[in-house]
Length: 527
Image (cartoon, one colour):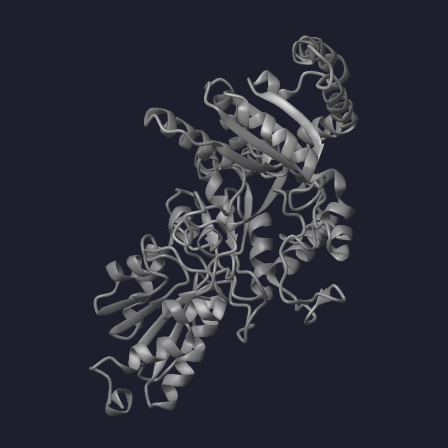
């Protein structure tokens, strides 16, 4: 918290050209910069670096298709380590594998060029051979997808051989056209545990670097609970399929992928395709369960609307990493899904607060609903509240005889609300807690029916942005005072979840302090 971002961030350094965090966008941004350079008659080089994993995202091909015919001098470096986060999948991976086996071609070319340079007339001979080489290349290395898009293809080259890489970079720098340099690397190179288990070390919590093991044993989390529950259902129901976008491990689907391989689909970094494909599966009578991080689900909003919701198809979205995620910062926090999911007609949105509720809501979503359903849950484990209250759309989880304030929340935030109520009780302030289990288009009716039972003062606590949140709906339904505690209409810094909670004023102590500082409360509160 307060330190340097793990991603590029222009506000931190002039050497960071743009914000990064999600995949597949570098060529698009780079082409825009190249166009700006031309329009302003400036002279500088534009280089986009993109991983082979990010190349499984459709946005990359939209950009390559446009950039290759743009005529703009632009270098795209394809960092090919045969990994995205999980093992790469799809036709592109097979295409790149074929290109990799021809790396010896470049070594031969370099040796011939060096020898010709030593003899008289070698330059002219080199140019003549280059023309022959182009023909030979099409035989030895079949025309690449990138060349068909308009790029001059260089490579593949060993990315750990700096001399070879620098030679090709120098060659690319002289070309006044779109060039793609294919660089082969090893993910995790230089650290044995990461070389052996690259997926596990893609992103790490604190760990013992010498031993290569986590600093502390991992606790059960919502992702694991989701994966275990889905396997239980799939064992008895052959209609159930699972879809993810390059995140089988992160979403808890590794076991499902092993046990039900024919019903598991990892589409690569292609969330739009994942949701549209789920629509096709649902239309033909299966029950697709799409597991995506909240921050990546943003990419598939159009498909949710156009392909799923309009046709009222039974697609189950399991929205992992909802709310505050922590250290990955502004690009990864799941603080927008409540706003955009609630805006889609006919889409149910469930918010489990613990593992028991997640299991119950998954069962309901799969077996009792007939249209699109989203289940949003946080990163990490459950808190102190472990009752299964999922049967009702709203529940009274902490009652008081004469409440002075009502706390309204949902999901994992119920733990902060209950803890805040306990702190307030120590100061003689009676606070009740209400918990929503559904936050979709039915919320307005639910709150209208419940508002009259609440205290005159209601504080709504959410770990999402203010706009489009439940708090705004409650403000329209409650006749008394309503205060909203949320992440605000802003992008958040990175840091641990507790630190970001405190930063936003939605941790238990901050909630209690906010209420105690209110001038209408008793002397104990003001003290």
